[in-house]
Amino acid sequence: MFVTLPTQFSTFEQMALSQGAIARLLMACAMGGIVGMEREWRHKASGLRTNMLICMGAALFTMLSPVLAGDIGTNKGQVASNIVQGIGFLGAGLILHTRNRVLGLTSAATVWVVAAVGMACGAGLYLVAAISTLIVYVALKFMGLFESRSGWKHVPVLYEVRGTDEKMMFAGILAVLDRENLRLNLVGQEKLGEFVRVTFTVSASSARHKRLLAELIASKAGDKVVAFRDEEED
Image 1 (tube, rainbow, N blue to C red):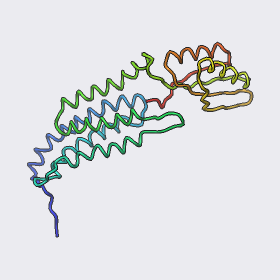
Image 2 (image 1 turned 60 degrees about the horizontal axis):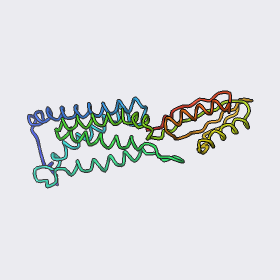
Image 3 (image 1 turned 180 degrees about the vertical axis):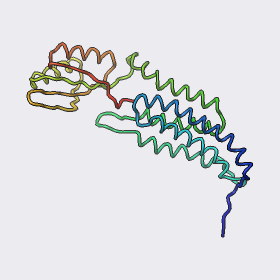
Image 4 (image 1 turned 30 degrees about the vertical axis):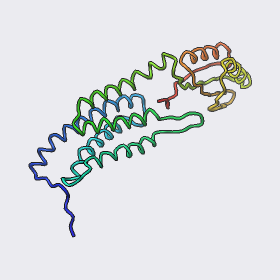
């Protein structure tokens, strides 16, 4: 027994429908690409290709949903509705839990909203998709900078103290952290001959980081003190 598809199209109908479909898919690729470039610039796991494919895939599933339902189907959005669940699993894979913090929440939220933009493109809502993409881009590009400068957001910074006297280095580091009411979160300790390198991380506001770095340098805890922004920060 053979089962036929619920809807069949002639070659002419397929060509006519493909013209509108191609425009929607290209729009989805463009919107996903805009968000993806920002993520790529920040060296995130969900970069340009990932966001483009997610946005285009969501648009394609949205267009296929009523087609697969056919003329007799009662739920035209059944396939499209499962996009949310599928993207949820994908976003969960971007979230990492470390010893003292959770990473990847912003990347997971970005993937989720990019899929929604793709669904808008698939539905032909170009203006809605464009405005949503603009809002997402502004939020990713400028809101983090605003939070950092306002002092609301605590950003993790990796400090590296280098010297030769290990005991004096730890004594100086602990003295500075005690004055700032901060706990030593040691990341690593390496010894190469007489040279010692102590690495630890601190999560605080930008103003507090500047003060902490100045105090570490002034305390002469080591021969050199340097600070690096955490690359894993969202």
